[in-house]
Length: 442
Image: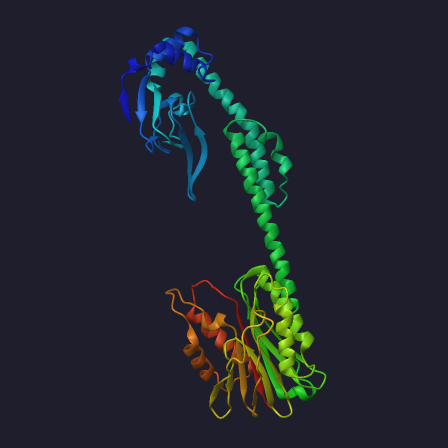
């Protein structure tokens, strides 16, 4: 703050400016002139603090030129309360009451202000008792005017906590002027956002429940399928995800199974996931497998204006012969864990579905022998990260699968997912995690 000669602003001009302020409006001419003679003029550079919250307050400032920002400091940070310009007064409580500052005031632009010191006002009040009565009346009036808005705000806050808030509660208050009305408008906006976020959260929870409902029920080992031990789990990174798995018996007794990962996140990915599952179920088991996969790709690529795609492994297992035919459309290679100890990766046989209608998709074939296991997964496993940013990777997955050799399907999935969780402990899950294990035990 730089002091400027008081002579640069005449006392009569200061008196006239003070007369326009509610707190000085009731002063008589003599008292107002006396206050004006005791005032100084100060200048502040842009960004400089006129006063800080919590500090002792002993003066007020009447702004002659420039603007200031008024902030409330709370544990969460600094909250902007108002911007005040020419011929407005700030810090008047510090001039009339011996109490700490209730706000921080920073110069938004270079500021020239009249400084009104409490010591001068107290001396003036001792000489002119009417000044003291006027100050008391003004502060009492302010307190009275605050009671009603504070009651509205308290009622609205309690209603918001009970999830019973209605915007009409603050409608009358937000139409008024003043800082509490400004705060009421800010509160109403905040409450509206909270209610909207709560509604979106409820909608996302409902969508998550719907997504879970379209996943297959726990696998039942009945008839020819008693030779198959199967278990799958999906853990979305958000409420809903773009991964999915599926398995179902075909009319001829074979088992169809799918694991897939849709590009993107959130609701768009979830919608494309549901479409992909419906398409795969629609074409499964009809005619030549290569032709079915080409049809699935054509359906997903047609009118795909969002340019989404899905990587997937779709396989069909004959539980009697162990013959496994599969299409790996750009997905992570599943692991075939041989009972004798060897591991085989089933490579991609084509590009992801949905990119182009004309892309070919080959069919791979192998035979599962008694005791063999098949492990399918999405890249949320291999691309899980720890707190240092290190990736889980294929090598750790292969070690986990080796350590789980001989376990049943549910044990195999549980062992892998537990290892990923330990590795990424403390790090945020960045992608959906899905795993499906099948052990062949004819």
